[in-house]
Image (cartoon, rainbow, N blue to C red; front, top):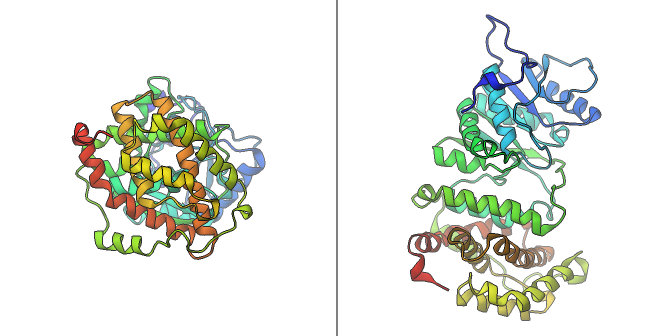
Length: 413
């Protein structure tokens, strides 16, 4: 583990004899106007506390409100910046914490000026007063935002690690010193190899370490656009890192207890509307026809490849989907859960080239998105209600993943 001595010399060390600062805020680079808004929000959130705000690009000096102390620094590990927190962010933040020794750290991602003071305060208080090691925000997003998270990251994390945070890859976090150290250790294996932009999965790290988690309502938040210019690249980046982390933590999640009741999960499944419930006009949903066309084209061209990954029952389900008219197009939650689990297994077993594997997942994801939008656009099912039902389906099917993980030869497609 790198020590604090590697932090740039232009960092401001604590004054001799002064107590450590209670709160350290590590800000991603912001434009001048956005930085001033973020600082004003922090001053409003913590009017009576001494807060150190670390930023790599403070811009022109400006008067600070309240008891904010601006800490310009040059990160020892270059951080690429962008739409999500990366390994370099966690390594640099822990080095700052070693220097300042705060009770809690707020690590805020791009566009952090859009977070309300109330959300900032609640995140910090969860660690300061709630004795929580990791606090994640629950953003209020639109029904078409964060769908990769809703389709894959949230339900799989909840099912495997027994945790409930809605955004496992949140771009704003509050954490304790020991949580920061855990994240830095996980991140340093990437930065040591020059992979500073690699993703780290905080919720999974906290669960595997037995640390406490809290989820805090954070209201609306402006989300920075992903660096990837196309869905294939984005899904390969996120799902590839996620699947690799699942592989690395298999010894934990195979024995982790689920925080759900099988009876409750069954009840949720029973409440899912059938294929004809709440019909929506496909022409009213932007991009829907393109998603369906992509899936049907892939069914023709990728069927042989999918047969290397998916069992016959799943392939039969996809065949039925390919023949459905747009208005009644619905992907069963159990089918999607089984597809994702089989792709995780194929990733682990290297059934085929991982780049090709993740590319073959994209049209199936688009089929799920189309189904989700059709199901929830009719008014009978809310988007969040469907996501919760989906997560219950992933929980119910976890034994399948565990069985195939331990004895893959018994379940060859």
